[in-house]
Amino acid sequence: MFEFLSKLWDTAPFPARWHCGEWSAGHGWLHICSDVAIFLAYMAIPVVLAVLITRRKDLPFPRILWLFVAFIALCGMTHIIEAVIFWRPIYRVAGLVKFCTAVVSWTTVFALVPTVKRVMTFRSPEALEREVEARTRELAREKATLEAILDSLDAGVVVASPEGRVVLMNRRAEEILGETIADEALHDWPRLLNVVPTRGITMTTAEASATQNTSEEPSIPLLDALERGRSVREQELHMQNRDSGKPMTLNFSARTIRASTGNSEGAVACFTDITSRVNAERELARSNRDLQQFAYASSHDLVEPLRQVASYSGLLAETYGEKFDDKGARYLNYVKEGSERMQSLVHGLLAYSRVGTRGFNPEWVDVESLVNDILTDYDSALKSADGEVQIEGKMPRLFVDPTQLRQVMQNLIANGLKFRSQEAPRLTLRVEQDGAYFRFSLQDNGIGIAPQHHERIFRVFQRLHTRNEFEGTGIGLALCQRIVTGWGGEIWLKSEPGQGSTFFFTVPRGRPSEVAAN
Ligand code: ADP
Image (cartoon, rainbow, N blue to C red; front, side, top):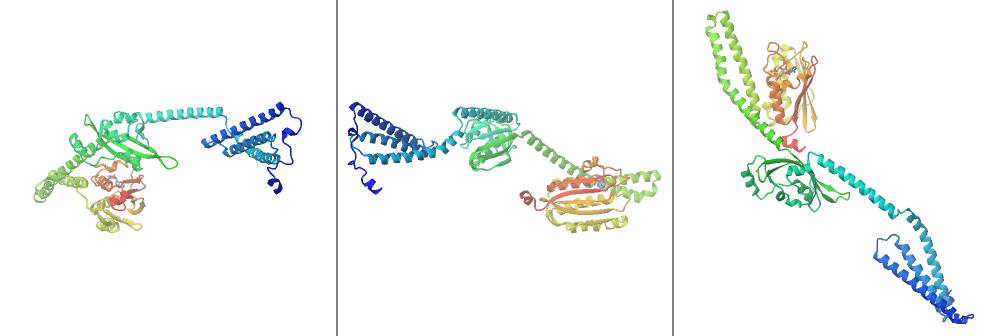
């Protein structure tokens, strides 16, 4: 081997090909010219391939292409050597180059087989084109469906690209905002539209324009979602029509659109026009306030004359009672009873209207001692009726106005004792945790209430019985409901006639702000 390599260029033992056999000049040059032409072509092909491979980095199977480059170049080398041998018999070099060519060509063959298998799985350009067409049709169908859905929505939808351009806007969005901002820069939308964000729907045009001058701009939910990645839910945005000054309230939700990689692909905002609802609520709140003021003022002003009628009819009966005949005494008694009853109605109404007009003073109240306190007042009533009120489990402490809690507990306990059946009254007070609330229940074994009356009995003056059957004003449960809903809780009942009743009510577990945070 070593000897072969050391004599690689040694031509001594061989004659040049011109001297080997009888060559005519034409025959010899035919070989020489053809070998040189083949060599040149075989060298040109790898050069072209190499340029292609280095320029197009995305070509599949680059390694096999490099093998082709080497294999073709080596084939070219064998041909040029064949031509050289006519003058210089470098048969050893020729053998070595042929050997290298053989190794590279077989390597190419072995590499080619698995590559061909993979290439066989490739789809033809026609098949790919058909597939692209089918997908394009599918996408167009999906887009049309999406657009139809968007346009049939009663909510406005605006989609912004990551660069802050409006790329999609449905019909309702155009209707609500007054014009299209599709394709516009989002930052500019208050300028583009005929609306300006304001701080509140209650503002007049003058107030609103004053607000415009404040440095702090109302935040735009879609921009928040786009720039800060902040999802916005149910945010009210107040706006005003630039020309008419007409206020408008929109309820916005917005969120960032995220790709599977987590990168932002823009943001989408949905909004509904809630102007009429907000106006109706404001109107309702205002008329409720007026009504409350009226109820308070009138019941408050009634107290004094009523007290006068009640006390003077009492005095009349006491002082001149004997002078009345039977009829007169009966009439006087009607006046006395009527005025007393009127007094309790007015006191009830006053208590009811005070829930809304007076501020309340919450403090931590121990429910158990408050209930025990109430029961002491009912001691004799309980004894005479052979009744029993049980507190089951440990009662919590509540952050409420103690007077209000007392009113609720007292009304419910009094009703449980009052609307008793034939059996001796048995009342049980329980409490359970219900999320951020405590759920209290007071169960009795009284006459029960038919389900169709379950809502009605919470309204003022709604009673299911006459005064002869059960005394009362019909204000107790209305008062309870007002107090409980004022705390942010609810009150309801479960009951069937003859099967007793259970009244439930919920109270926030902590201070109201802590409940909101829960
Ligand atoms: P009042 O007790 O002064 O009649 P309420 O507002 O407290 O007024 O109650 C309204 C009506 O609901 C009562 O008249 C009664 O018909 C019914 N009710 C309330 N509590 C009970 C109860 N525990 N069992 C049966 N009926 C009840």
